[in-house]
Image (cartoon, rainbow, N blue to C red; front, side, top):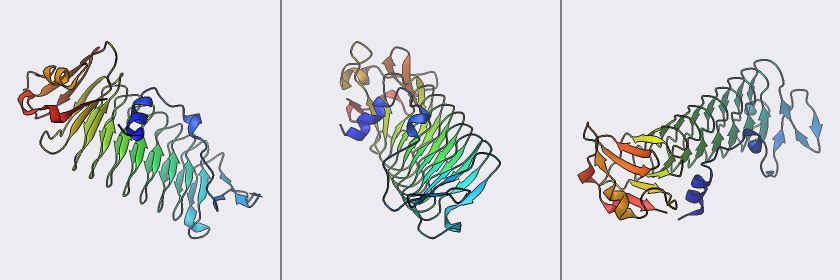
Length: 271
């Protein structure tokens, strides 16, 4: 099992937004500040009040920006460069632009778009819309009933708490609804649907038993099936004829349009 896949199980307990306010420094980046403040060669852009609009390319091409919104509803666009963008309070519209960006929605019901590049996006609190765009992205809904869309690329998506809608898009994606009753849609490609110890009652809208899709379940001592054979034996059809995989402890996943007899051991992985 890859360390990345394991990290999705570890993140089943909800992350705190404040833990995502900082990350490793990138050489040559600019922190932009609305008052033009310059400290140690790094400008900062920190907007405390008002509905702000900011575009990284308005300053200089290929900046690596650090941009922060304020208390209200902000529109921030990193443009060209590898950017750190923080929405903070309010219902924000946040775009990474080109290159590999990290975007934090924080408080409010936010729209986050990675656009081009391999991006990392954290929705934060409330009901967020998080979209990766092109590139191999990592999306985290965190709190609230979120909508996650990986779009193009090989993406990793984790809904977090709440009843989320998680879509992989094109590519071989890894989807984990997290806590709550989630709707998962892998899209094109051979996708992995990950279920940890607190997965809830989930639904997969497009599971393809012959297209390389796999259900990955964390093996929990004394809870649910302890082998792939037991997982396969736990599958029954509901009243609509859709397969239901019973993980035990009130946790399950329903596979829309797939009957129990269409599944095989190749569709399951216990880790």
